[in-house]
Image (cartoon, rainbow over all chains, first blue to last red):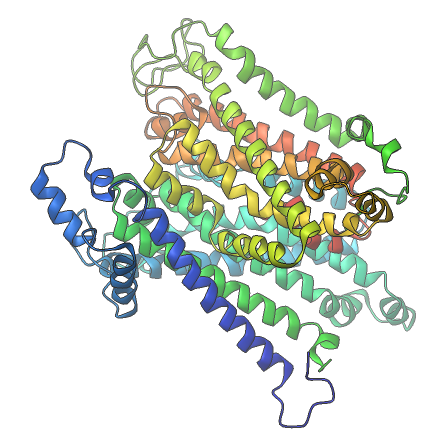
Length: 329
Length: 310
């Protein structure tokens, strides 16, 4: 890096990093869009036949070919597709002829609520549990919780979701709705009861990883000299933990929370399907069953965009949380 | 830090033989290793021997839909009145075989590209790792769904899609482990002898990466099961009426109140299988790469997969 001993006019390292990451993110998204396009449309063979099946009538095939621009060259097809996305008109659904964006954007808003709530609740629960257990290192609680975390980590999210339905919505206690009855067009947050089980499922799935990382990072910080010093000065345990240990354990924890948000982007697919939650994940599943290519393309692109965004945010936050890496090198 | 062996042995040829067997035996002596083997073993045995033990045909209707357990159908009937016991016994082996094949494929592609990136460096490293970054910009299940949406839900195409979606994660781990080995003196020595690069990677570097390779294989097996069972659950698995634990959960959940066993048993088997394999992999990781509870953060970030990044 050339910023060593640079003049006062040089950008702050954080700004520089941010610019670098955003540029890299934009490049990644461009490549991703090519991959999505190549995988869905430019495959060898005719996509129109693949979508409509071999029994389709020639007029139907021609209509679809025109709609997907299949009668042009691959590059022209990609150009038409990407310029449609950039201008905000990414085509119409092959199933009902509605503009894709009018299907995807309300679903994306619902999913954002689901991911946001689960991510925040999961982070708070995971960090709290991790810090509490770190204080009781090597106790029975410590060993039991780490084994439990190991087991829960391995569970597929649909098994957790089914267990939640069996426990709280059907067989054992029938207290919560098993299926979201959110009418199309209404927002998810208008029906809080419908959100309980999907959010609980996603929280259970992400907590173990955040918990393990917080526990490990806090144990390491508590074992350090400065924490020892603070204890020797006679500070109460909670103060050593909150003021001395946790701030130094925060960088790896932030990274893990970032990874959990990334994980949620994939996890919502199955969880929304189980609870029939009207989000982007269940839309993707039905689009894949219907071979609704324009909708699949946009949803996958939105999810990839979310991935790139979370990566940038968690890199920058982790850097901000590590004071010694904040200075110009 | 992923160390290849604890003591940094300078004589790789001695260690090369049966290093994996030593790791397996020592992992099996850990309590959690034994637990994982026992739990996973029971489910694998159910899947493998089940088809020979099924009392009825798994596709014939013998009782009323969602009938409660009775003498002829010990776990009751499913949505079409088929015997749940027979479907459970019959519905694991394809899932297991697909998961094993996808894991083998993913670990093979991932290791080959990871080692190549680390050893060849330069242009190859850039090309391989940029490709990895692009594939990692998709959630794994979404990437598999994208491929399945076009290729169609055929068994072997699903295996290809899932295997391919594993490769980038494996490549990243193997690359970071191989970087260290590529710089060792014995590699330099073989290079001076004029051995071809492909042979160096296969015969000199790969045998020294057994530890991370074993851990990765275990983790990828867990995720293969999660993803393939998940795809079946979403309706993109084997075509009906083939029995499959993932499919069974989805097709029978509307009858959850009538006969919960048709859902609970396959869900429990999938849960026990993934818990068993993951616990076993954790034991292997403790032995092979020294996953240490005292210095866990470094390991967790180096090999995040150990704790569940998917």
